[in-house]
Amino acid sequence: MFCLFIPSVSFAETAGQGKGIQLLEIITDQTTVIKGITYPNATVKVGSKSALLNSTKANAAGEFSLEIARQSAGMKLTISAEDGTNTYTLDVTTLKTGWVQQDGHWYYYNSKGEKETGWIEDHGKYYYLDQTGQMKIGWLFDQGHWYFLGNNGAMQTGWIYTGGNWYYLKENGQMQTGWVLSGGKRYYLNSTSRMVTGWLRYGNSWYFLGANGAMQTGWVLSGGKWYYLGSNGVMQTGWVKVNGKWYFLNPDGSMKTGWVQSGQDKYYLGANGAVSGAILDAPLIGQMPELPRGCEVTSLAMMLQDAGVKVNKMTLAYQVKKDPTPYRNVNGQIYFGNPNTGFVGDMYSFNKPGLGVYHGPIEELAKAYLPNRIVDFTGSKFEEIYQYLNNGNTVWVINNTLFDNVPFQYWQVWNTPSGKISITYKEHSVLVTGYDSQYIYFNDPLAVVKNRKVEIGAFKRGWEQMGRQAISSQ
Image (cartoon, rainbow, N blue to C red):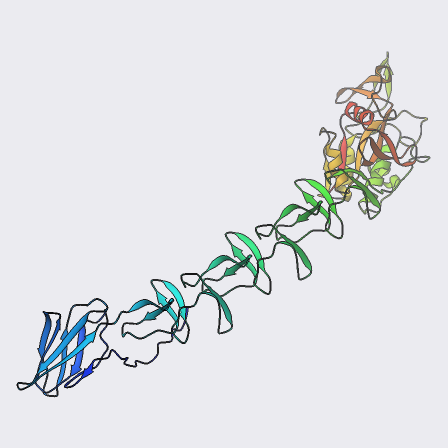
């Protein structure tokens, strides 16, 4: 991590040198071998107080080397040399190595008893010693990078809090700026390396960092307004779908409530911001005069055109499947076709018997124009209609001309090739285009009214009575 600067050895004042004896190295509390030069073939001894630590004989050049046990710092040693005529002595004191406190500052002495400078490693931690050897604490600028040294001098890593701000230091101790990932969360450090909280403009996007500095995702409340942040932390604008519900966010990111215009369509956003109403701008087509009984294909034409398909009601009237069973009344028993099989009777005139067609043949025809995009959710809950409208898709339904329950007297039983069914001539098809808290809105091909509205409860009763038939696109 660091290139440690170790200065060249320079013998200090404790380097033993006296008459007749010269030591080649400083003696410290780490010394185990004493080396020196004296008279040729002299007997060399080293002792502590009255104890003899070791002895040896110098060679013909006067060189000697003898081993001793490590001595504690400050221990006075006496080294003597006898050449057969004279005895020479030298007193030395062992120097301390490692950390030494002097004049209120800490220094580090290496195994040779020399002060270290620059970066050093001790027991897996890094310290910095200035040119005088003094240990530094606090902020340090070295070779273009900032480091932080704790009160014990050890280089810090990870998060530190100082001067009222949070900072992040890499594993090599260098102070970081910009985005940092820590503990599975993202944080941002500005140009001065301070951790940012609150709103952050980064590039062309906005982010929100919590009180603890962590980048937020999902919904956040700031300044009394709600904002939504994507999984990447970016503040969203426009339409967003969260947990199956749609919300609209203003250009400044704040969540909108009330009516919002989106293209040609309008949506109502409740107090919680979720879409709770919509009015879609679908084409309005009248079934008359060409198709007195053609409400189903006319409503389908509106739905397909709204989905971008260029098709007209007359083409659909020709293409929809038909049930050719003729009308007969035998002793008060009616025999006729089944609208679940195909269109029953005459679509083009009231002069001949006829009724209409249900969702099955309509779904089949719609799929010919929008393969893999048509959804027949007949039998579902009424509220599912809202989901399609929220997604901007109109819904083809079967209801009745009363848009409520049809009284008993308007129903009759038919005998069809596939069995008995209950039928009402009040049957009617419309294209649902919207809803709000009170009303359902629809394009009515018979009344030729765009976004006609009926109270939700009444419309729902009529729809359920007619078999909950509904088709949409996706």
